[in-house]
Image (cartoon, rainbow, N blue to C red; front, top):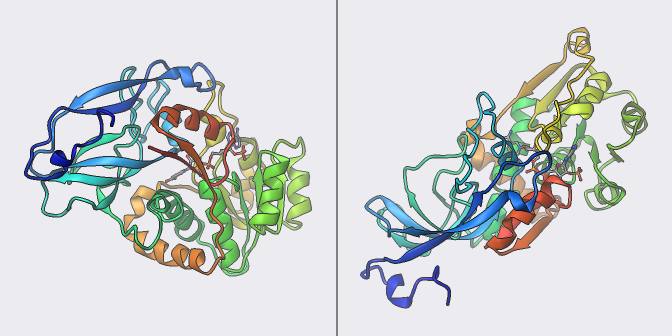
Length: 360
Ligand SMILES: NC(=O)c1ccc[n+]([C@@H]2O[C@H](COP(=O)([O-])OP(=O)(O)OC[C@H]3O[C@@H](n4cnc5c(N)ncnc54)[C@H](OP(=O)(O)O)[C@@H]3O)[C@@H](O)[C@H]2O)c1
């Protein structure tokens, strides 16, 4: 039994928990260009048992999100969470089991989502901080869906897809939709949700294998590899006549192509810009901004954490699609906390389908 596992006596709430050690992923050095595993190291941090209003959680699953890469850089991004300092333990969305509770709201054995990822054990205040609005300590019903589902399709990825399509892009009957990074977590949900609502949907991704996955597994109406030199040609081939909605996960050249291919009054939900996270190069910006004016386009960025009132609506709709088989949700799982750095690197390099997770 490792030092991080509670003894039977410690599981009994009458025995105070002491001598606990939390193993954590720490930022060792900032990436110079693409992030590598050597940017991270592990640290064992002694932690005290929970005080009043706190719970002790053993993490089961870590959510591996592109946004963690933004915080590895030295320069703050205005409006976003601050960079990690060298030597900081990373944080991120996670799901775990309560081992000890000093809060009347939570009981031993509850399964909870929170933001103290990238570690095995965490003491968490019940009224603690969130990650840009998401990840407040929240109990989930893991008897209906497996716990890790609440990090993916019924978690932040699902909420981002739901909000982006409905609230931000104001998806309307008959809209033709393009989703980028469509084989990833947010993209695969957004694309299938739009399909389930009866739209014509095309997707882009970074390899032939992913294009085949989008067509054969996700049943999209068209798909292409964004590495083509002729993005506009690919769009014209797969969405002749234009698109009404572009769900943008990547920014850069694909955003520029979308602006050119959108129909008048088209809408863009700017969910993320992963093409510019894992690099030190200057980001590629659209050179065709006048078309935003000429075609009366709407480009709107959003953070799903500002839409916490939509969790139930999202889970009802996407949970329904999961149950009736209209939504296929892939997970790319890395085993053990030791593999969390490799999971970050792999996901940013496209070696994932659907949600990237680390099973602790
Ligand atoms: N606004 C919000 O509240 C919110 C919340 C969660 C996530 N997001 C954003 O949503 C986007 C997708 O996140 P996710 O968690 O679903 O990750 P994901 O799509 O599962 O994984 C990231 C994907 O990015 C693609 N990628 C990497 N480099 C790229 C490049 N240079 N150009 C184009 N694509 C590239 C890779 O797919 P390929 O193999 O296809 O290249 C990779 O699989 C990210 O931008 C993220 O920041 C936003």
